[in-house]
Amino acid sequence: MVPLWLYLAVAAALFSIGMFGVLTRRNAIAILMSIELMLNAVNINLVAFWRYQENPANLSGQVFAIFVFVVAAAEAAVGLALIISIYRNRQSVIAEDVDVMKW
Amino acid sequence: MTVELLVFLILSALTLGGGMLVVTTRNLFHAGLYLMISLFGVAGLFVLLTAPFLGVVQVIVYIGAIAILIMLAIMLSPNITNLPNPFTAQWPVGAALAVIFFVMLITVVTPVMNELGADDWVNSDQLTVDTAGDVPADGIATLGEELVDPHKYMLPFEVASVLLMAAMIGAVLLVHPGKQAEDVIEDVA
Image (cartoon, rainbow over all chains, first blue to last red):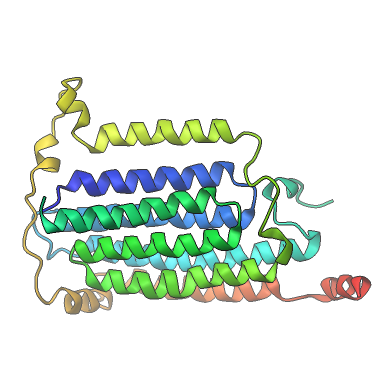
């Protein structure tokens, strides 16, 4: 089998790529996409640790990953609604432009 | 090189290459398409880890719902796909932070430091040697039963449904044009 640390290394790389996107992209939708990448990295870790435990009949890792899916779906829906609402009010989705809550 | 390792490397290349293009592509629409490639690679990794149910859920929920939702949002806001400068002014700092974080993680999760002799890595045996047990054949059925088992994960399952409901109502309320927004639209018209 592929050793566990290879999965962990891929997940670490994916998380770092997502972190780079969150820290540097200006477009709010691009930031949201980067957050999805980070959530996926976490999911890879959860499933890999589930698989490489001594008794995979314990399904906690998979169940946890399913709940991460649910939270990611909720987060994407609310996040995109917020972005569309901001775009409607300001004709912009650049995160730097929205640095004042009410003007 | 075994077939499994080859498949793993291809899927990893899809995942990481797609992810890299998502954060660097200037055109946001293309970034959304690359996000789908990356998510598909992750789904393949799930299947390779003998979690086929999660792989299918990944394709349906992530690629079929979330990525499509993001593409819809991109198309609803027309003049945002090609910003003149996609990165903030602090992007070198962000890149440096991401690289430092990656190096930090990689030294912890991989036996690299141990190989270099720089670190007496106590648990390296447990991570490098594969002690994985056999996956039960009825894993998906067990997963379904445990999700609705009151002694297992029924409470989080129900809480998750409430969370999805709240998120849906919240999203509808947020994008619903209230009275003020209607005035703005009339002004523009």
